Length: 314
Image (cartoon, rainbow, N blue to C red):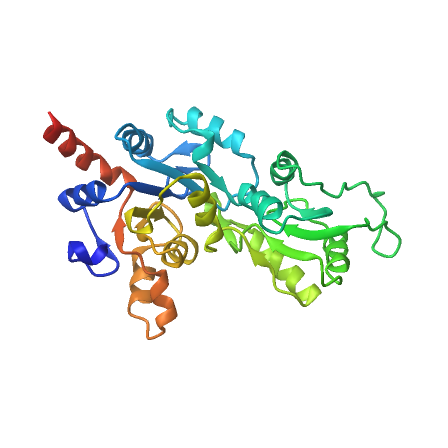
């Protein structure tokens, strides 16, 4: 679709160009962190953009690699930050999609050992997937701890209480070639205020990949599975009618490219336009999948286009 507007990759657009794009697309996929909000603060204008899209009859979904909270908590957060029209069915997190993968795709028959937060466990439990209960003595070690029977999958997500014992147990379970090795996402890190960073699920997965000698199947972006989840729950989703809006080239833009979607980078998060231009000019063709079709400073740049559309309809 990008070619239809006469743009090359990584094209900064505004005004009438955004209006044309909004008219051409029926389905909008948004990342959350860095696109919709920063922590507990909504990005200026984002709520009005999302609410306007929904009220105009556009399909809007949210695809996030954040696996730390169940979808119900996301609904509360959206409402708290002014996104009053967002429903549970519009939210696709890597934890929710991991639960769907285990239940509906591989149809796991046994327990799942989880390295992750309570939000990930809750999504699995709501899907009816039994998780190994952690009840070790504080002084237990891998030499004397109990290992659960019938573990058929190890799932790694963000875990701010990761211990060496958890890592060692997971490594033992993965010695069974029939035990699945899954990761909610492969995000390496997340930005914090003051220039600090938070190690992401990808860093934990990498440690376990080295220890086990196996590679994890990644459920979240940039894997296609999240889009397959959306397609299974929304009828008639046409990739050509979709726009993926995100802030991270290596996850959001690559996800869109993997799924055949047009992509838009917003500069309110992790990646900046200079990085996208480097990928665009790279001699490595694999890097071209990381290049967005469009770039905006913020999704608030959509607002003038809505005003023009409203004037046309009056």
